[in-house]
Length: 429
Image (cartoon, rainbow, N blue to C red; front, top):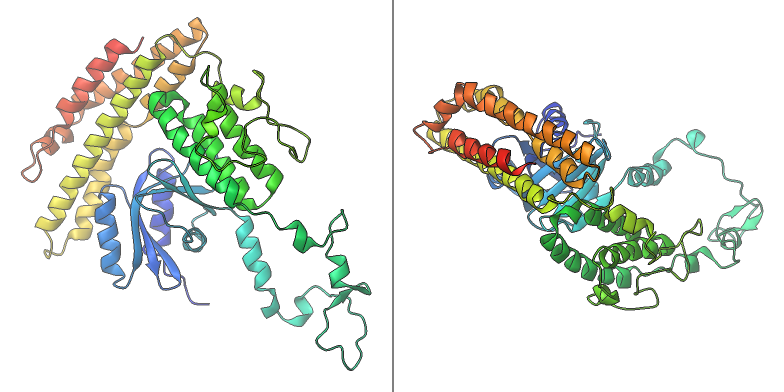
């Protein structure tokens, strides 16, 4: 079988995706004929990565760019791509592109958090089953076949002497074809309306983002799986969390969705396979998920703003370093050492971003969710320890002043991060 064209070396792809476990890497994807191609880069801006990929594959279609991220704590095999536009239908192809990297699942998200596509390992099993007719006859599973008469060549294959049309029935006695008549369009439309509401809720209260987006992701996956009971329960769970997480709200949270027998949050008519129901009571599991540790810390809003300030400052520095890399690449284009320039950036500049990482943002999340006073103070101390660690790095790294004074792109790494950390020391308490 011919080697699948990926867009970049598989070992390098694996290396960058492994690094993305600590922070996202910039990414670009597209379609080259029947294959999906992908290119990842630590420094270059996503749009620049896309242009490079388009240059490598002249006839590439549907270019998309954004970031790639692997959450090792949630699912170490899942690559989450956050892209600038919808890329529906590209997930399965990208899954093939990832073969050999150790990552076997793909989730495509849009910048607003909407799940565009979710492809798991089970899809690969289906592809292998489809390929079985090409195996030698002796390797295929034997299928009992009843004797055929001279006019039976076009008849359906029988199993154990029973016509296939009779064996393809579910426990209720109805043919399987009827059992698979689940139409996901109504639930999909309802979920779309809930996601719109969810984005406004997250805008008003960013601390709820992780829980709500996780519920939306599970609802999307359940709809895609095609099991009506599970899909309905998952969508109900999101609706219930949106409603119960905001005192005084009514079921109007579902107003953007197309209503039907299951449009209102609460117990489903059919329930889940194990008999569990999505409830509107205060003890509802989805309500508990929305507030993992009970009431938030008294200064949760300040801590959330502090976290956002660090993430924004770090992103600004990352973007500026990416622009410096682009400017230097253009300046030295044609000089024959573009690859050496990439290596210099990877060996010299990447350690700066690795040292000034996302651990402070994660710690501030913990502080904001802590309800026990003693634990809260302990976490505050840990957060301030990380801030001190960052300040020491900024004061002692000799490369940062050189980057700030470079002749290509004006940078203010030292000034920007020092000022941000100084403000955080005052607000984190």
